Length: 277
Image 1 (cartoon, rainbow, N blue to C red):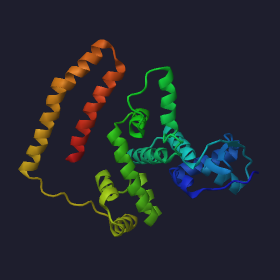
Image 2 (image 1 turned 45 degrees about the vertical axis):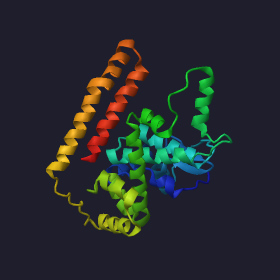
Image 3 (image 1 turned 90 degrees about the vertical axis):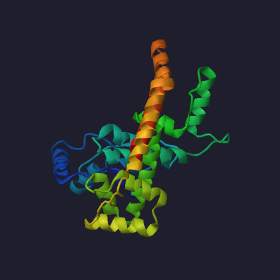
Image 4 (image 1 turned 135 degrees about the vertical axis):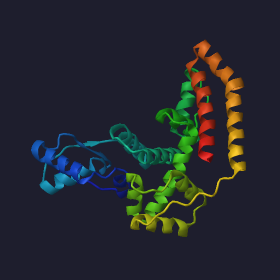
């Protein structure tokens, strides 16, 4: 059997199997053998960790497939997109993966002109056709995952907070990603921007010990709700007037790109208002 290296960061990206699912996989491998190859990058396992563990335990033969990536972040993005496409992820896991994808994409090595591989690709396309309106990471990933660009940026904050908690307590991180912890997205995002090291450690410990309690919301005053209503009225007025006209024109012209952009703009504004409540 080939020599395989286990990378703990890559392994931690894979959702843990519950006992029943693991037992079913083990039974299948014992009965049918390892039918799908394990995927490696420079000898590092990037897909098939559970199968590898079971095959090692029972000395079941397996095949491997080598993938080529220019760097670690490209390998990381491949793992993320493969897991998103393959698994039925819970909402917090999906947000976490999107946030990791955003960070990995931003870290990709810049070329001499200061553009990453995707921006360079956009420049090549622009020579042969219309250039996309924007090649920023958040916009491109919002199209890929069918969410708003603001959601992608919030997911990036959430991923930072979960990883910070995981550095203090891997078990707390697993609890959050499994959906078992009552911690909210809003609390995680606040930790990413304002949380101290001591606060993050305290929260990680309380999640691990099962004593975590959500922060109590402050009493909502009439003025706060009036502000929300005023903001909502403003957004709806724009939709009914200028934005609504944009949507109608794009629809009547059959311009799908402009129509999607106008609709996404409305969704972003409503989503920001929703998050502020």
